[in-house]
Image 1 (tube, helix red, strand yellow):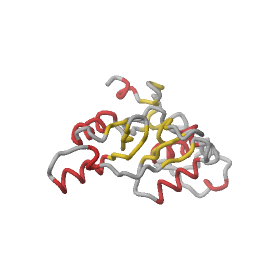
Image 2 (tube, rainbow, N blue to C red):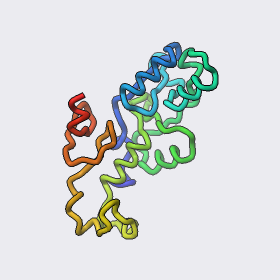
Image 3 (cartoon, helix red, strand yellow):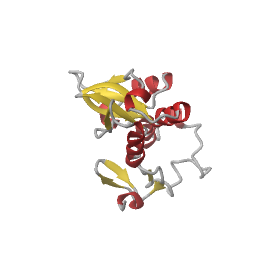
Image 4 (cartoon, rainbow, N blue to C red):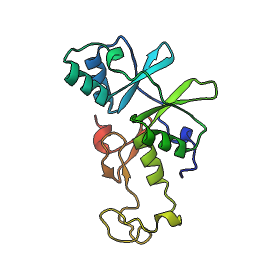
Length: 183
């Protein structure tokens, strides 16, 4: 996969959705349990905001009062089209404070989300070894050329815990290590 791939190819189709009237601590616990950075705040099927882990923490620390998701959410929903290139999502994430973008189809219906981790994973796993832009990048922990170092060629990153492992398997649409599959 390359930066010229579309957002549809890297997005997460299963996303966490919450309501404006949900308790902010319950929503924060849901984010933690699901291992995600943010949730789409929905009014029916329409996204009306984003709730991110940082927003929950900021709300609790600043206000002290535990209230609703509507009080802690960001009411601007950053959207990207599913057929746009990955570089568009990367530019949007870098230029905003958001870590999650809502992905929409041609009818503007929500079909998933794309996160910073999705983009990093897509670019890192899809890097073309013949690509001239990667010549000066030193591989982590090896100190050798990635073309000659076979020790790490079969490893990937667990989508739940972030561990580097060679024991990844697809489970509920995610690539998970053996520890995360057992949970």
